Image (cartoon, rainbow, N blue to C red):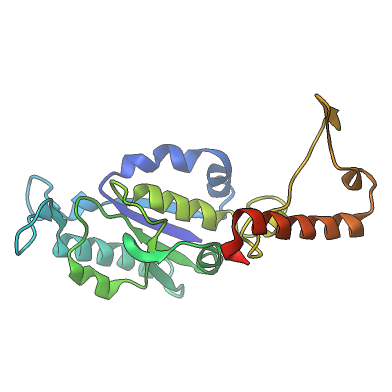
Length: 228
């Protein structure tokens, strides 16, 4: 998979790409992340990418011509390097569909993702005609779309085959099956009077699986009944 990120602040992604699961996935060739600076398509010598909104109002709006030229530039690169692959374009916006694990699972099936990060007061509305999916990571407002793009990138990459080492790891996580994950325990077996449930120590995998499913339902009912 290749993920292209369009942003005003490409340096935000330097550390993100080099550490933990993301860094290992890149080094192993399972994913490629390319970050594009929106200012490279600016129309003046000052690198301007925004302007005052027509009709008045506070703040600045990202210009349509800069956004579209950057998008077309990235798309042309992908078509020349991977001519037979499908491209999915995603806009980071608080007006989008709230991000869920099911969306991450769908995006993980794509060959190429283009993630566009907003800033200031948002985008010129005309760019939406070129977008496949608009995503919000929650009902709140961020300074820019970079954090949202990182969250989407991380959640998608960990679903790619072989990235986690054991593919079952991503299948058992919270939300993957529509429920919260069951409680997890490790050594020591007892500490400060707190013990690991006996059922996890007996080696009966059928009973352990049954217990885990029951615990997932109980935990979801208590903490996120809206998921049931």
